[in-house]
Image (cartoon, rainbow, N blue to C red; front, side, top):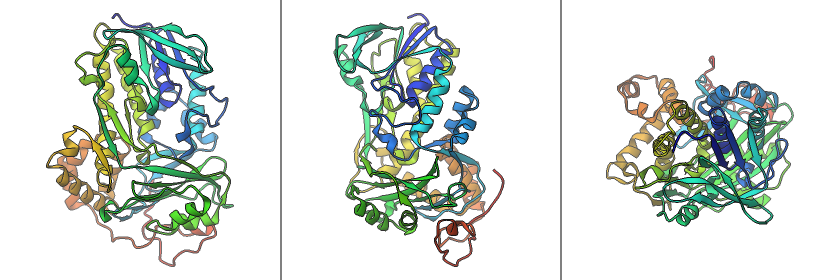
Length: 481
């Protein structure tokens, strides 16, 4: 195949739009096929039920989006998004205990998923170089096992299918991708897939934040402790645009997910600390409870196939999807778009180049895959189907003990915390946790006393009408961004 000039991207979500934007920088024609009719504003849509739950965009992904679409961060903040310095603007109970609020060395953008999607989509489509076929579903791929030459589509409401010809087809349809069926229709075997399924479920409700707590009140998170060997229960209160809080309660297999109002508050009371329950009691609920069970870590390996058709790429959640509690999905998609941009600039999609580009996309998702996998296999009742030796070999228990040791230190050692947070946010490769500098920090970094209470600043709890414990907020160590 010569260098492509026409591309079709399947899926108009976050990954699909970023991919289309990158392709439009290099190709003559880009068409996005989307089953939904995309909303003209920050609104929910039928094909994205997971958007009801909390989402964060780590600084690694936000930085890439800013390079591709300058001014995005300012537009998000102007629309009400919060830039949360990690850990400065976050109160966190980790599995190891309360996290000190060290000076921020990285950040996340916090707002609703529809706002994130809309701000980015609006900027991308404003260029006028991308055609969007809305209300259109994919029937199958056109071509054969050696080369894909387009895609067959039809109106989502029915009708006769038609063909969109393309030199390059990119599957960005997400967790619901029908890639396996499409490939089978071309006479190809199933793609190797790994699964790590802790049975994660989510229940989310929107609240109106108390008066006075809409701008400076921190994000709050209470995590499960996997070492108890009981099903995990998590809770977060994350600030959103419009003076609102989004509260998501999370369970692993064996802990019932709340679906009713009394169950929602009851579940919050069962967390390892009462702070989430206290905050819910201080706020006004303004939405129903939305639930889902879409937290399985799943990964495909197209690059390992004996034969892979030229002109076909897989990206975003179609390639690798992670437990959303770690917030890696959107940043991983942005990193994949960046990798694709670099490959296109190097003309890597020339003759025989599809596999090389797909391999690069696989490398991008490896760090978030192994971080999520190693974490989730520690929860009871986790179901694992993987050939990844890092998750199954005899050294895995030792690897997990080291991860727990790092976690125990990072909540109260500032330099250890900085490195660990940079890895978690995908700003630094995971291999940094094994280099000599970091191993030295584990021995020499300052170790503050363990905290026994959540580290709120003076006056923060009063913002929401709660009384402080009376214990000084010695866990708040302010400093510059």
